[in-house]
Length: 193
Image (cartoon, rainbow, N blue to C red; front, side, top):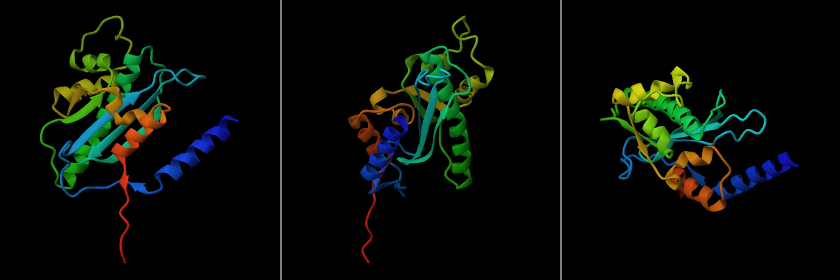
Protein backbone atom coordinates (compact mmCIF):
# COMPACT_ATOMS: atom_id res chain seq x y z
CA UNK A 1 0.00 0.00 0.00
CA UNK A 2 2.83 2.43 0.88
CA UNK A 3 4.52 1.82 -2.47
CA UNK A 4 1.25 2.43 -4.29
CA UNK A 5 0.77 5.76 -2.47
CA UNK A 6 4.35 6.77 -3.32
CA UNK A 7 3.84 5.85 -6.98
CA UNK A 8 0.66 7.95 -7.07
CA UNK A 9 2.60 10.92 -5.66
CA UNK A 10 5.23 10.55 -8.39
CA UNK A 11 2.55 10.52 -11.09
CA UNK A 12 0.85 13.58 -9.57
CA UNK A 13 4.22 15.36 -9.52
CA UNK A 14 4.91 14.48 -13.15
CA UNK A 15 1.43 15.60 -14.20
CA UNK A 16 1.72 18.88 -12.30
CA UNK A 17 5.19 19.77 -13.57
CA UNK A 18 5.11 18.54 -17.17
CA UNK A 19 5.22 22.12 -18.50
CA UNK A 20 8.07 23.20 -16.20
CA UNK A 21 11.82 23.06 -16.66
CA UNK A 22 15.07 24.65 -15.56
CA UNK A 23 15.68 28.00 -17.22
CA UNK A 24 19.31 29.05 -17.43
CA UNK A 25 19.37 32.82 -17.70
CA UNK A 26 22.01 34.63 -19.70
CA UNK A 27 21.90 37.64 -17.43
CA UNK A 28 22.51 37.60 -13.71
CA UNK A 29 19.49 37.07 -11.48
CA UNK A 30 18.88 40.35 -9.65
CA UNK A 31 17.89 38.60 -6.40
CA UNK A 32 20.70 36.04 -6.32
CA UNK A 33 23.49 36.72 -8.80
CA UNK A 34 26.05 33.98 -9.28
CA UNK A 35 26.12 30.96 -7.01
CA UNK A 36 23.73 30.63 -4.06
CA UNK A 37 23.14 27.45 -2.04
CA UNK A 38 20.41 26.15 0.25
CA UNK A 39 20.88 23.29 2.73
CA UNK A 40 18.35 21.47 4.89
CA UNK A 41 17.80 18.27 6.81
CA UNK A 42 15.05 16.39 8.52
CA UNK A 43 15.93 14.74 11.81
CA UNK A 44 15.78 10.99 12.22
CA UNK A 45 12.82 10.50 9.91
CA UNK A 46 14.07 7.08 8.79
CA UNK A 47 11.92 4.84 10.97
CA UNK A 48 14.24 1.82 10.75
CA UNK A 49 17.71 3.29 11.32
CA UNK A 50 16.72 6.75 12.65
CA UNK A 51 19.07 8.40 10.18
CA UNK A 52 18.35 11.86 8.81
CA UNK A 53 18.01 13.00 5.22
CA UNK A 54 20.27 15.79 3.93
CA UNK A 55 19.36 17.93 1.00
CA UNK A 56 20.89 20.85 -0.84
CA UNK A 57 20.30 22.92 -3.95
CA UNK A 58 23.01 25.03 -5.57
CA UNK A 59 21.70 27.71 -7.90
CA UNK A 60 23.48 29.80 -10.51
CA UNK A 61 21.78 33.03 -11.59
CA UNK A 62 18.50 31.77 -10.16
CA UNK A 63 18.55 28.31 -11.79
CA UNK A 64 19.39 25.05 -9.99
CA UNK A 65 22.64 23.54 -11.29
CA UNK A 66 23.30 20.95 -8.59
CA UNK A 67 21.09 19.24 -6.04
CA UNK A 68 21.09 16.19 -3.85
CA UNK A 69 18.89 14.38 -1.39
CA UNK A 70 20.53 11.55 0.52
CA UNK A 71 20.39 9.63 3.76
CA UNK A 72 23.11 10.70 6.19
CA UNK A 73 25.71 8.04 6.92
CA UNK A 74 25.46 8.50 10.70
CA UNK A 75 22.67 8.92 13.23
CA UNK A 76 22.52 12.59 14.22
CA UNK A 77 21.85 13.15 17.91
CA UNK A 78 20.03 16.45 17.41
CA UNK A 79 18.33 18.58 14.80
CA UNK A 80 21.27 20.97 14.98
CA UNK A 81 23.73 18.19 14.19
CA UNK A 82 21.63 16.88 11.27
CA UNK A 83 21.41 20.40 9.81
CA UNK A 84 25.15 20.99 10.36
CA UNK A 85 25.94 17.79 8.44
CA UNK A 86 23.64 18.85 5.59
CA UNK A 87 25.26 22.29 5.46
CA UNK A 88 28.72 20.70 5.40
CA UNK A 89 27.70 18.53 2.44
CA UNK A 90 26.40 21.64 0.67
CA UNK A 91 29.63 23.53 1.41
CA UNK A 92 31.69 20.83 -0.32
CA UNK A 93 29.40 21.04 -3.36
CA UNK A 94 29.66 24.83 -3.40
CA UNK A 95 33.45 24.55 -3.47
CA UNK A 96 33.20 22.25 -6.49
CA UNK A 97 30.68 24.50 -8.27
CA UNK A 98 32.93 27.53 -7.71
CA UNK A 99 35.71 25.60 -9.45
CA UNK A 100 33.36 24.82 -12.36
CA UNK A 101 32.32 28.49 -12.57
CA UNK A 102 35.98 29.50 -12.57
CA UNK A 103 36.69 27.02 -15.38
CA UNK A 104 34.01 28.59 -17.57
CA UNK A 105 35.44 32.03 -16.82
CA UNK A 106 32.75 33.12 -14.40
CA UNK A 107 34.74 33.84 -11.27
CA UNK A 108 32.65 34.26 -8.16
CA UNK A 109 33.59 37.44 -6.30
CA UNK A 110 33.46 37.00 -2.56
CA UNK A 111 32.00 34.08 -0.67
CA UNK A 112 29.00 32.11 -1.91
CA UNK A 113 26.00 32.47 0.38
CA UNK A 114 24.84 29.16 1.83
CA UNK A 115 21.39 29.47 3.39
CA UNK A 116 20.53 27.30 6.38
CA UNK A 117 17.26 27.43 8.35
CA UNK A 118 18.57 26.12 11.68
CA UNK A 119 19.96 28.86 13.90
CA UNK A 120 21.94 26.36 16.00
CA UNK A 121 23.76 25.02 12.93
CA UNK A 122 24.54 28.57 11.75
CA UNK A 123 25.93 29.43 15.19
CA UNK A 124 27.99 26.23 15.24
CA UNK A 125 29.66 27.31 11.99
CA UNK A 126 30.28 30.85 13.19
CA UNK A 127 31.38 30.03 16.74
CA UNK A 128 33.41 26.82 16.78
CA UNK A 129 33.31 26.19 20.50
CA UNK A 130 33.71 22.64 21.68
CA UNK A 131 31.54 21.45 24.48
CA UNK A 132 29.80 18.25 25.44
CA UNK A 133 26.96 18.80 22.98
CA UNK A 134 29.20 19.06 19.90
CA UNK A 135 32.43 17.21 20.64
CA UNK A 136 31.06 13.97 19.17
CA UNK A 137 30.53 15.47 15.68
CA UNK A 138 32.92 13.83 13.23
CA UNK A 139 35.84 15.99 12.13
CA UNK A 140 34.94 15.68 8.43
CA UNK A 141 31.78 17.74 8.97
CA UNK A 142 33.81 20.67 10.29
CA UNK A 143 34.94 21.33 6.71
CA UNK A 144 32.22 23.96 6.64
CA UNK A 145 34.05 26.03 9.26
CA UNK A 146 37.24 26.12 7.21
CA UNK A 147 35.27 26.97 4.08
CA UNK A 148 33.73 29.97 5.86
CA UNK A 149 37.03 31.05 7.40
CA UNK A 150 38.68 30.90 3.94
CA UNK A 151 35.97 33.01 2.31
CA UNK A 152 34.54 30.24 0.11
CA UNK A 153 31.10 30.40 1.71
CA UNK A 154 29.11 32.61 4.04
CA UNK A 155 26.47 30.71 6.01
CA UNK A 156 23.35 32.77 6.61
CA UNK A 157 20.09 32.03 8.39
CA UNK A 158 17.00 31.85 6.22
CA UNK A 159 13.37 31.29 7.18
CA UNK A 160 12.23 27.71 6.63
CA UNK A 161 9.54 28.85 4.18
CA UNK A 162 12.25 30.29 1.90
CA UNK A 163 14.70 27.39 2.13
CA UNK A 164 14.34 25.66 -1.24
CA UNK A 165 16.29 22.60 -0.04
CA UNK A 166 13.34 21.83 2.23
CA UNK A 167 11.66 20.05 -0.67
CA UNK A 168 14.60 17.59 -0.75
CA UNK A 169 14.26 16.35 2.81
CA UNK A 170 10.64 15.81 3.78
CA UNK A 171 7.11 15.49 2.53
CA UNK A 172 5.59 18.90 1.91
CA UNK A 173 2.11 20.31 1.86
CA UNK A 174 0.74 21.27 -1.54
CA UNK A 175 1.31 24.97 -0.82
CA UNK A 176 4.92 24.43 0.34
CA UNK A 177 5.65 22.10 -2.56
CA UNK A 178 4.27 24.59 -5.10
CA UNK A 179 6.27 27.47 -3.54
CA UNK A 180 9.55 25.58 -3.89
CA UNK A 181 8.81 24.20 -7.35
CA UNK A 182 7.96 27.71 -8.55
CA UNK A 183 11.30 28.96 -7.20
CA UNK A 184 13.31 26.14 -8.78
CA UNK A 185 11.55 25.64 -12.12
CA UNK A 186 10.09 27.90 -14.81
CA UNK A 187 7.38 27.40 -17.43
CA UNK A 188 8.83 26.00 -20.63
CA UNK A 189 8.61 28.36 -23.58
CA UNK A 190 6.94 26.81 -26.60
CA UNK A 191 8.88 27.54 -29.78
CA UNK A 192 6.93 28.76 -32.78
CA UNK A 193 7.81 27.04 -36.06
